[in-house]
Image 1: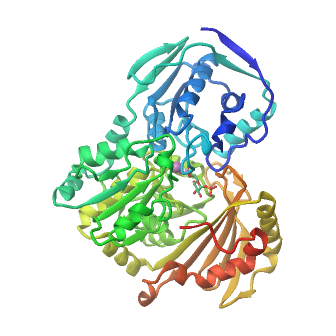
Image 2 (image 1 turned 90 degrees about the horizontal axis):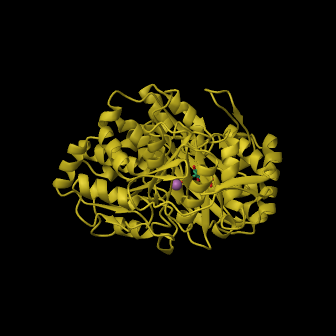
Image 3 (image 1 turned 180 degrees about the vertical axis):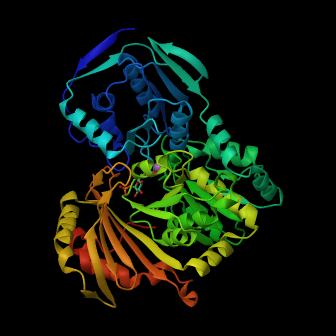
Length: 543
Ligand code: VG1
Ligand code: CO
């Protein structure tokens, strides 16, 4: 096999976003695009000579071809070994675990997560560091810098590796080890939770529906829920990963997981429903007749985590992304533990987890996780819920009602305006930023602004500073609105508007969220001129 050095030149737009680089699949398939980015990752991390890497992805269109390119480039760049999920499959949390378990020099995860898959949809690639977590900004900055000066890449000429057969083979000097994607992850879950209690729950007739949304979690959920825990056959639906996720949007929210929502709100609803996203790191939790917002789920899991053996000793602290509701803050206060507020994106939790300052982390976008890996973990969240349900022997609805009665309720909703012209979205943010100093004390309907700023984060562990992480406007009532632009989209801009209000009056805790948030929704438009700038009269997705 011959090592080739191919001349190339920088390609615009290879700047990693919230979670790696995401582009239209056809862009990734374009001449040198993938190769330039992979070489830039290698260059940005100081080369891969004698290093070991984990490689795997969510199985979307182009996953299989891209993995072969990555392996041939790793070999040509002198890597010692690549550990690859069978058929190129690894969920994001399973990849994070494998990096940690095997002590590798990091890994490459092929996924555009909740974005749709297919030749006309999206593809993505990200590098995770040796702690198993997404590369922090310092590393992604170096990768991006490398994309701007790249002039050649190295690749091996030759046959593809056989990724269908478990075991070790060689690609030139590099070892390729194909592993079962589920085994190690499933073993880790068994160390965290009371599997006997969950088994007894299912044996008692408890019914569940897990919608894998034709994405990567299918094999994991089937093995663990139906295999090990004894949930009825058919508990996992849409459990076979498909390259275009069955033509759907593998984003577990009430809009894209509508089938599950309909089932759970229907007359013969099972006791518990859940869904996960393209790469298996997100989760949606639904009880019979009740949808649990991700922010509420984080708060409830924090309040009751000690149900699971792994957290029996208590939590060291919790962390949430800035736009996530403050529900978990009040749990932390009551538990007497620290609560950190970070920018959007799991990469900001890594230092807190590594330093032992936080045990549980979460984001409003349906991501929850703990210090067992360095990614959010969809199935983990589902298993912790099951462990709590097995311990308390009560319903999701009753658990949430008790939680709100104890801590108050944060009404919460996110409104997304998708595919807005980039110039217009930027103009909205620029105008909003300029208006910030004048906002305090201004009234919008019944609301008065108490403070307004642009969020910046000083990492308490390594002292790094991240600016421009979302604009937040707080009201004297305790409510707030946050505005930011998405960093995971591939066309135009997506404006995310995060709306929140706190309710402590038990008589008013069971209203519809959109209704409860109506004054804040109106204020958000008045403050940011959403209609004026975007031309839209309503959001595309309400979650
Ligand atoms: C979104 C979410 C963010 C999440 C990120 C990656 O980012 O808001 O909370 O960490 O996706 O999730 P953005 O920049 O589009 O708002 V995943 O599961 O798509 O890797
Ligand atoms: Co994801």
